[in-house]
Length: 274
Ligand code: SF4
Image (cartoon, rainbow, N blue to C red; front, top):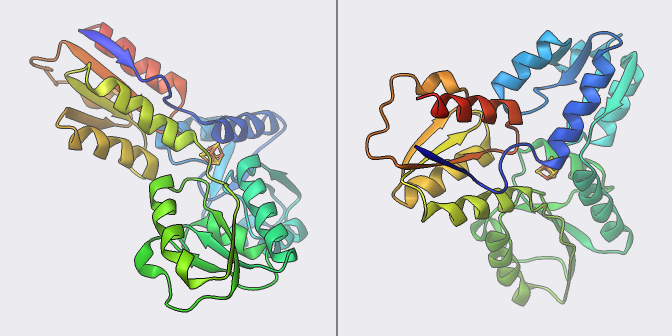
């Protein structure tokens, strides 16, 4: 079987950076992340063996060395953690930090801030928590209210789909007098999706590697299925045992932004060994 790995697959810059930061810090003793550092169970298990543990409740930070994950934290919560923890290790992705800073700048310039994103996502809560006034938050055209303030300044959750953002902005145009848009979408997710689309025509099937709790991996799986390809979504190579891969001459491989390279290699080696 021939194997074709998508050009962009696996760890994005922000996740790789966060993992490097915690690994280095864990060499000096146990550290704790506020929630899972990334949405990839095999990597979380590996990190636990190196002394990096997820905290399930923020109340548990007292006296611990605590990591702020790549999607950031609202400053009020950051401050609380700073008071309680023995040490705070900030692994906020610089792209997320930029979205926070741009939102603050728009507010300072007198715009009512609009965040295009999922209001329940920790990253969006982090951007909103950096502002003096509550921002407006929409994730789709249907959520846009009929009446809007005259001057609005827009930032996006870094993982938003650009087509969706364009649709939302188009729906705002006849409701406002002035609109300023700061492009804060990070292209890691879009690049993985495009790289998968680019190999789809050449392959007979696709293995998507990534956590079952990872939204961007789910989107990769959907793209492959919608293209009519036989698709396997796995977290580890062991899940392929027993598969016969009938009629698959060329297999495409892609992986979500939280999937480490060693998990991808494990799958490649498994397929090569068949
Ligand atoms: S997807 Fe982009 S913004 Fe999010 S952690 Fe990765 S590099 Fe940073």
